[in-house]
Each structure stands twice: as C-alpha cells, then as structure tokens.
Image (cartoon, rainbow, N blue to C red; front, side):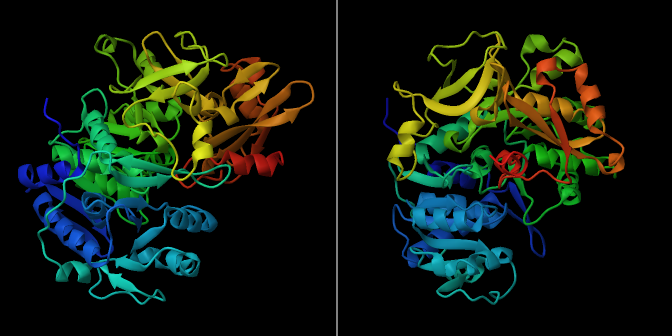
Length: 536
C-alpha cells in the first residue's frame, strides 16, 4: 500500500475544498461573528504568513491563551500545519503554574485574547523564552497594554497574503501540546502528533462514538485549552460540520440561547456546565429540539440529572471518558441495538457508565497482581491503555514518564474502574480518591452521585478521613440548593443514603459548605477539600 502521512493539513484542505460554504459561528466581544470554511482557510494562510514573519520555525512552541472562538480555531490549524507546535494555555491555572508551563514549554510567541491581557501583563517579566505577544480582539485598534514586542492579530492578518504553501510533514511531527492539571507537583506536558490527532478525529466521528457528521452543528463548551476541546474542532472541520464557539466568559443564559438560536445538534462539556445549564432550563423556556447528543466528560453525572435532562428535552446525556494523556477519547457510552426495548431504568443504568472502549484502542483493567480483573461489573482494578493516540511520555520528564507505564508498556491511567460482561467500563474513582475502610474499597464517585440525587443537594464531594480502627472513613461535603439551605440536615442526608448504599459506605461526617472548590477544568478539587477538612 501507498505510504501516506496523516497530517492536519489534510483536514484543513478538505474543509477548504469540500465544505467552503459551511458556516462557523463565533461569539465575539462585540457580537456574533460568522464566516465559512473557505474564508477561514484564507485567514489560516494569512496567519501562517504572520508566524513566518514573527520568526516561528518548525518545532517552535506557540502559546495560545484564549477562549473558544474563531481565532483560536485558526491557531489550531496555522501553527501545526507550518510545522510548529500549538501550546494551548489553561487560563485557569494558578499563576505560578501558568508561568511554569510557559517557561517549561519555551513558548516563543504567545497569542492572547484581549480580555486576558491582565493575566499575561502580570507575569510578563517572569517569562524566560517568549519573544513577542499577539493580542486577539475585534476592536479596530490594539488595546493599550504594558507588553513590549506586541502586535495586534487583525492588523497582522490585514497585512499578510492569503495564500500559503503548507509543507508536507512526517505524521509523527509534533502538532500540539497540553499540560495536565496537576494535583501534586508541576503540570506535565503531553505532546500530540499529526498522526495521533488525525486518528483521534477519525475515531470520534464514528457513529458509535460522537457521531459527528456534515449535517451537524457542533458547540464545544469544553475549553479549547483543555485537550483541544476534546478534539471536536478538528473532527468537525474534517467532516464539514457547522461549528459554534461560545466565546469569553459565557453564562448559562448565553449557552442556552446559542443552543437554541444556532440549532446545535451536538454539544460537550463537564458536569458543572450541565448542572448550570439545567438550572437555567428550569427558569426559562428554550427550544432545544435540535439537540441529539449532549456529551459529558470529566466526571460522572448523578442519576437524577441524567433523568431530568431526558424528561426536559428528551436527550439521554452521553458519558465519555478520557484524559490529557489520551487526546482524550477512550470510551463512549452508547446503548447496543438489542437494548432498545429495555426499560428506561435499565437504559439509564448503562448510560451512567463511561461506556465502551473506542475502536482503535486496547484497554485492560488489572488488579494489584497485574492480571485482568473479572468482567463482572463489580471487580475493581486500574484501567491501563495502549493505542495510537495514547501518550508515550511527558515532555522533558523521563523520570515521571517511567512511573506511568507498566513493565510491558501499558499506560497507567491511575483510574480505578470496573468492566461488565457487555464491555461497559465504569470509572469508580481516581486511585488516590478511593476510600479503604476496614479492607473494603468505597468509591467516592458513586457515593457523591448518590448524595447528589437528593432533591435538595446541588453538589457533593466525598473524601477520606483518617480513622484509628478502620484506617479511613468517608466524609461528605455538601452544597445545598438555595431553596433548601438551613432546611436539610446532616441526618437528613444520612437517612436518604440509608436505603441506597451499604452500611459500610455511610459517611461518618456530613459537612455543609457554600461552594465546592473546582480545578481549572471544572472538577471537584479534592486536594483542597482534604487540606481544609482533614489537614492532609
């Protein structure tokens, strides 16, 4: 067979030639911006010429501190298609972590959205490798800034040519990088190659995964700085799907209006987004009849929210699972053909799981002895992976790389999971978050989701607290809905749980707080909770 390199240039060229009239919608600072793939291609070419003018060469890292918008999409293609590496910067990192990842990656140029200027201005003197900055916005003139060696995106593009001869690159050329959200130590850099992104896009477009097609309108709410918005901008561009980007500092009302007005068919985000959106859906009426798939990742949704969405808009939310090191798609939860006649309760029992392993990947769940656990949906072990879009290590971190691979080369996710006889994987917990009480394992995720099914609970997190006799016991930290504050007691929570979980799983302590701290990608920050409540 012909030797053929898989490159992002192929996705870009297909969008240009096959879908030039398909629309891209971006919520910009002064309103809604609309253009199409044909026009996007010309702007990507302009941006490629700009990168060359700024001295960006093959292998250089280019930082992007930006929201989900059309300029960020242009960076997604222009940077890697010229042979450089796009480093998407997590704008929610702690300042010290943001400085670390920029310097560790040695970002030569940083593109920054105009409303994020203060973030960069505050750390500019601590950036050791960055030569210049490019501000992105829609105002006619560049905003005032204390940055030096600074340019304005639209002015640069206006002066650049709209054609560019993109090079042919080896498919193993690095295309993009993202840093993990570290809970211990510094964030770790993960490199994505042209090949890995193309294969991941192929897999995510399949009918039994995210089912992205030309007829869809895709709105990724998951940030473009987090694992390439789960790869959706690349997948959508390849198949010619219409794309909608929610822009800077959106709220639930903005999201619901975009879903309705742009007739979005597929959207994706983390649980905190879907909790926020559902609260808005209970306040105002929206026509979301166009929606056929809501993808949830990051952590599992509680049953009551899954049921509420189905009752409200007729869509069963689709769980997916992945991580920075896996590009990220590993599993996707779809019902099998013969499950169509099952009861709704049985269907939901399946849809609460993270799903089937995506075609193209190999996965195992192994016990402490390294052997596969039984496929009974109960036996827990660590999920380990192999595949063409699974990382081979961390950028400039050989020692930390060694720690995450088994002796025979499987990537250790550090996630504890089960797999049932149908092949459905359910993530029980991060290894560090499992609670071991009297020799038995307690899944904090399952316990959290059960607590969140209480009608008065908005959020719940469960952590381990030290215990002299049992080693560890669960502690529940609960946020009540506004209408239930001061009306639900700790005993009410325990009474609710008593008929739903084993006695061993009952929390020893229930604490109420106003808000659970979140990580930079919207997950519960259990490290902060452990520090606050147990001093560990």
